[in-house]
Image (cartoon, rainbow, N blue to C red):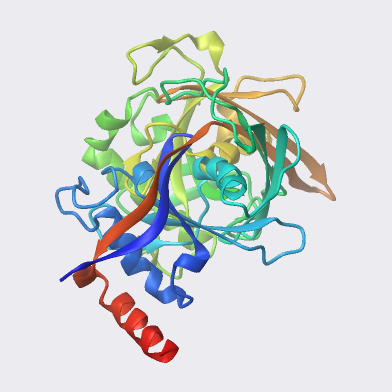
Length: 399
């Protein structure tokens, strides 16, 4: 059969890559989107490489973003994020991607969704997955989003134009509550894992944190090494599923298995000399604590954007697992320096106590982005039968 061509842009946002579509270039029936996204990325691929599509073989390189007109008065655009499985056929819409959020403001400006006068852009992005507002600010260059700059972010081998992302009221993005269990610490008793302490925090995206020692790690192990530790990865997945059920994201651990992005597991340790992917060692004094996050079955090579936000917020909530290991600070508004596999990421988190409860007013993340290819993404018609039928029906109706 022939192939179908869909207008698209291929972009890097932070340490992730994604195919970016305009909403009007996709079917109005959103139930048809998953088969298109799978075909475009080359999933499922039992070899884990996505060679027959645009995906890169790991979760951070297998993403889709869709931009459309705003559905809220306080936004300039709507942004929908989809995580596409690599080895499986799962396409999930229950979380946002902070890294790709960095590319959405520039895309919106360059594609004419938002008009900018002057050298500075400010785009109000409504993430439909979490129903939260993100303010994106960046420099312009000759009427387009700037690319060149001197900001270097861990995990990207070149400097670029810094994008500031302010996530407003990030708490409860997935569960409705900053502390969805109602506790800063929960003692989990998980079959096959045992009893351990965990903190479940939901800021930008739900995450469950344990101390690295609770799963038999020091905390500075590198992603590929951890991925190969089957017993450790199985424990982290069990913690993820059990925590998801505990906070109401699913009715059973079996149901949570089908929701790989609904909540992520992470482990933390105190600041210490930490090797990173480049072979460099980050000195203990350069960070406030060390963190690793599992995303869609892999330890992320660079801390995911929204999970970075959640981690920074968690470090400012007294009593959490993250707060326990974090370097003490006198000023709670000071930058949070997280050591992760690609270096040190710096964030800001504004967390206060309000009416006896903790409240995250905002969190700030810095990223770079770049448009790398524009044109059409081709999908084999045989892989998208429902989309083919949709097109034929609409063509007949037009006649």
